[in-house]
Length: 161
Image 1 (cartoon, rainbow, N blue to C red):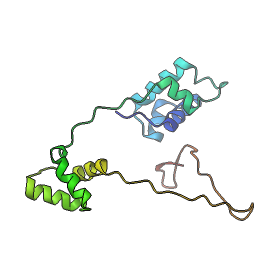
Image 2: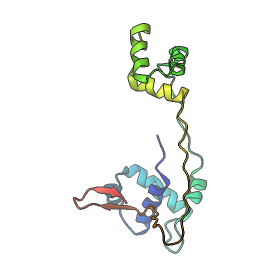
Image 3: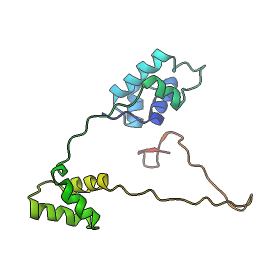
């Protein structure tokens, strides 16, 4: 199971400090009641619900929660065909064609998504570079989009702002 995002944990703790019930937080955030209770217990143990104290920072929460544990990965169904897939990738063959060739020539029964994920691991894409643009003061406006919490839109649906 994946850990809840740190911003969401802070949001849960903020709402608990404001006296919201587990049910209300569940309804607004969509997190399981069991998860909310788990973080309430953690917050109580470390004094994070005391309104006189500042909400814990992400680094403080990370220290309390400890390192993220990852589940052991299963072996891909494409693993037996690693050399074949690598050869196709080296020749620039599209992933859809690789999947079709594996099915036709080698009897592969797995999904295209498995082939696509496996090919991505064998040949990861290079991240794109960006160029910083310097301008004079007042020549350009910039906006910093930060996390402000959960809210309801005009239709009453839950959304992150």
